[in-house]
Image (cartoon, rainbow, N blue to C red; front, side, top):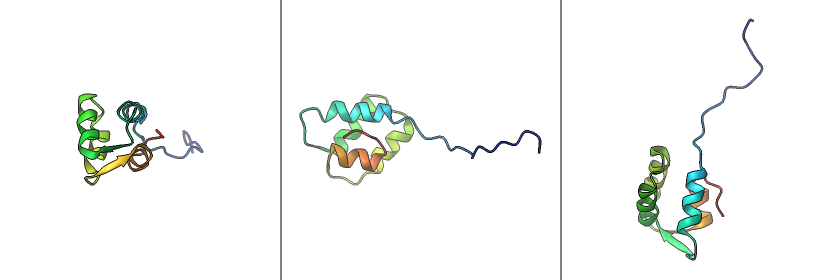
Length: 77
C-alpha cells in the first residue's frame, strides 16, 4: 500500500517534566506532602490540565515523593 509505514501508532503522552520539577521543588526538605498541598502547588505552577486531573484524582492523604511520582506517572524520586 502506498503511504503505509511499519511504525506503530503512537499515543500522545503528556510531558511529565513540569510534574517532575514540581515534585522536586515541593519535596525539597520534606518527607511527605498532602494531596491537597500537591494540588494547590500544581495549580499555582500552572501545570497542564491533564496533570492537574491526575493530582486531583489522588486519594486524600500524605505521600512521599516516590509514591507521588509513581501514582502520577512522573519520574521524580
